[in-house]
Amino acid sequence: MTDLTSAFREKFKDAKHIMVVAGAGLSAASGIPTFRDGGGMWRSLDPTELATPEAFAKNPSLVWQFYHYRRTKVLAAKPNHAHEILAKMSVPKYLKKVAPSAKTFHLVTQNIDRLSPDMLEALSNRLALESGDNSDQPKREYVSPNSIYEMHGRIFDVKCTECDHCVEDRSNPLCPALGAADAAFKDYHDAGSQDIEIPVEELPRCSACGALARPGVVWFDEKPYHLDVINTIVYKADMILVIGTSSTVRPASTYAYRVKRHGGTVAVFNLDPSETDERSDFVFCGPCETILPTVFP
Ligand code: BJW
Ligand code: ZN
Image (cartoon, rainbow, N blue to C red):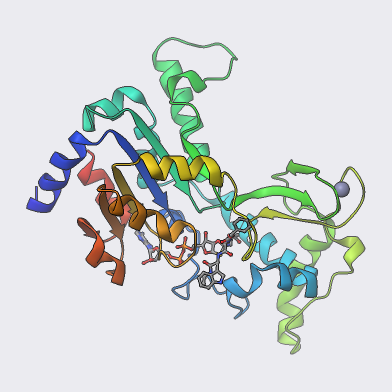
């Protein structure tokens, strides 16, 4: 065990209110591209320029095709070891082992891929079976309630642009035109065209009122979800793990600094060093899916 790991474990043992702020690097090993290291490019377009209300207003067909591609990637993805460790932290008996003083654990994720909540549900079902519970009842009682907050929304949510209607829909393609555009793109591209324009009436529509639907995610200049409760979590946290995020997008990028400012401990788990490391107490450089299981065996 390295000095860094043992010093961190000692500090973690004393933590009472633990939070995680996670980003795309958490799901990178599951095959989901990140945003800012080039891996997320789709048809040579910058993902951060497609994830905006302006891009959707200008070209909903292009933005829907981008999300169709991302939904397809996510549907094929499985949670990795880092998701598993974080899910275990939501199990009181496991949390007590690594942090005997812990009173709360919360995962605030910027990821929209649902891998953390899906992992937690699978773990809860496994724990239920291990304790002889074969019922069809929901198994959430085996894990702490409300431990995950998906602040940038959920990729499978399809939300109306006109009314409040929002449904989770994991079907793929969401509508025939998205499937056809995906299949046809290579031919279009070879013929020199960059874009396939799907008529707006053939894009996903609201099942309640028929208006154009959009992905239920948070784009730039939109309000992230659960901000009030997340602010309370940040305010109380005495330990924050910053996992797989470039910490460039507000408000998530402010959480570590805020925890530090009121005397809490900051531990960063990232593939690469970054400027914010100077302000952190512990920096674990490397893939989180291999480092987290060694820190929390
Ligand atoms: C690994 C790894 C491995 C790789 N292991 N590590 C000017 C200045 C400052 C701020 C602003 C400004 N103008 C506007 C703003 C605010 C704006 C903002 O912050 N912009 C900055 C970019 C300048 N923020 C907003 O607009 C937010 N809203 C807001 O502030 O509202 C205020 C409000 C309050 C009340 C009422 C009304 C309004 C909304 C932000 C929405 C962000 N949306 C996106 C798209 C979501 C949907 C989708 O996925 O399509 O969210 S953009 C994108 O960035 C996505 C991500 O969640 C987010 C963060 O990215 P993340 O996760 O950090 O990914 P990467 O790629 O950047 O980093 C990955 C990291 O992992 C890297 O460091 C790798 O090294 C590492 N890594 N493999 C460990 N195996
Ligand atoms: Zn509607």
